[in-house]
Length: 263
Ligand SMILES: [Zn+2]
Ligand SMILES: [Zn+2]
Ligand SMILES: [Zn+2]
Ligand SMILES: [Zn+2]
Ligand SMILES: [Zn+2]
Ligand SMILES: [Zn+2]
Ligand SMILES: [Zn+2]
Ligand SMILES: [Zn+2]
Image 1: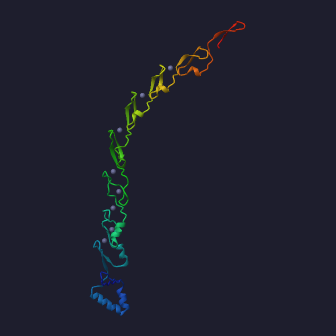
Image 2: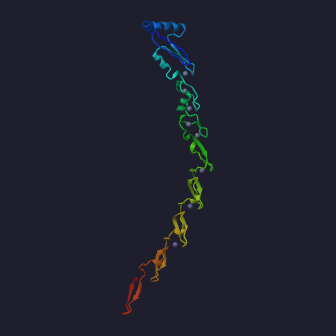
Image 3: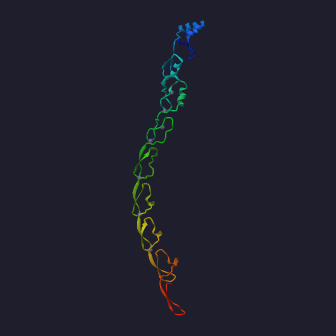
């Protein structure tokens, strides 16, 4: 097969005719005349040389399949043009609406931006940067340090390190660094002296003596009979009515006989 190429340029536009010249000349005398004119002007050949307007690459096209060598009209090289983000365009060479296409390109290359501490973003260029998860050391005002994610870095953070603190009661307690020791509830078991003068053991340190009932058994006076009775120290005898256990001798007034009775 021989390929005929003819072109004439008007305002940078050309007309190319592709076909089998042998067949055309054999079928019509006019094609014979056209052929001799084209050959004289060196406008006849067996292939078409395309030149990429971006890279200057030349591609020879001889049959229809050869056009696949220039899929987007330019050449087979990567475009390499500058995208708005600063990366080079990695698409196959394209020649139409270059600027517009570059504006619309979703750049899949690694993001070149950094966080406020200079850590590289791990995302893709087109997507907005996510919070930085690089581990950094954070030294708080209390002097304790901890490992935190970059975006969690906060010098005013509450320090949750466990420390031993001395309480006002004299005991020591382990609590988080930020916790106020004056609010700490001391549960150490102690002996407390109550307002009645008795001591009570096994009391949690934080308990106020005014809230503790004295369980010590003491002798109180039964207000109904005047005899002594055993009651818990905190119990008011005015509020208890117990049978008096004291044995007394009673005398019947009519007969004068005596009887022993508990009440
Ligand atoms: Zn090209
Ligand atoms: Zn990019
Ligand atoms: Zn491009
Ligand atoms: Zn960071
Ligand atoms: Zn990013
Ligand atoms: Zn601390
Ligand atoms: Zn205590
Ligand atoms: Zn008491």
